[in-house]
Amino acid sequence: MTETSALHDGAGSATRERFPLRRWVLASLVGLAAGVISYLAYKLPPPSSSDFDQLWIAARALATGKDPYAAFPSSGFAFPLFYPLPAVLLALPVAWLPIELARSVWAGFGAAVLTLAAFRYGRGLATGLVSAGFMNAVVLNQWSPMLTAGAVMPWLAITWVAKPSIGLALFLAYPSRRAVGLAAGLGAISLAVFPAWPAHWLSALHGAFQTAPVLQPGGFVLLLALLRWRRPEGRLLAALACVPQTIGLYETVPLFLIPRTRWEGYGMAALSMVAAFGQAWVLRRAGEPLSVMLLARWPILLVLVYLPALVLVLRFPKGAPQAASPDLDPAPAERIVA
Image 1 (cartoon, one colour):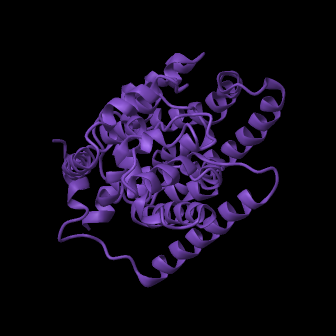
Image 2: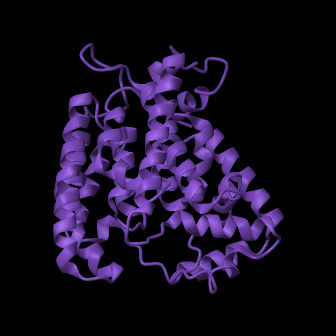
């Protein structure tokens, strides 16, 4: 177990940091704003749905003793349930709410915990809250804010098992015994609740269109991040490049764990906004199939988001993380155990 993982595990021990009241208030306000944005996004025409709707439908089916994977042929969704059962279990607390409120609570919680994580982590993570990727995650009710927060607040690493591909990338960057224990515990509960879910889930994945960025044109360049494999930032970028995903803007939120300063983070956030507008312009001409849209938007995300992240990774000194220089915010582990 590396020093990084030991410090990560220690974050929730007797030295755990207590957030001042003003930080809780600010995180609550950010969460409230995200919830309102999510609510309004689905009130505006045309009618739409999000991936979270799948979790909501599946959780309500599970709560009534039904097979959550069998709930979709009659649900109106064109796709089966792509999430493993642990993700459905994590959605159970909001399954009793109407879908409009459930979406808002989900988006608000993700925004709030990412804000708290940004206070603890320092560096450039807070700038991710003004990025196009974060806004995309809020509107689409995606997991990425919670997944990213799990790298800083170990108890949230339980969400990594809900989206195993991105969760694996985060675990490789920030290995944690607690994450393993939480994942094992939730996995055991899910098997006790519905033993057949792994077969149903794997069958559903056959219809999923996901790909690893490294397999896209020019994506192999991201493997240069392995030149800094001793650093969590290098492992994170390389792992994210190798795991299957839909390569959407919301998947870029974990990249804001990379910037060492707020100004580097603001630069990435600004470029993500440019990428969002460029992507919208390109997709208007690309057509509807997901595979076509993915191929159309990838060059924009590569040039404006992933390559700048690679540049930041390669600017780190070689070797394991050292103490932060006086002109930088303290490293996350130092902030937590101080």
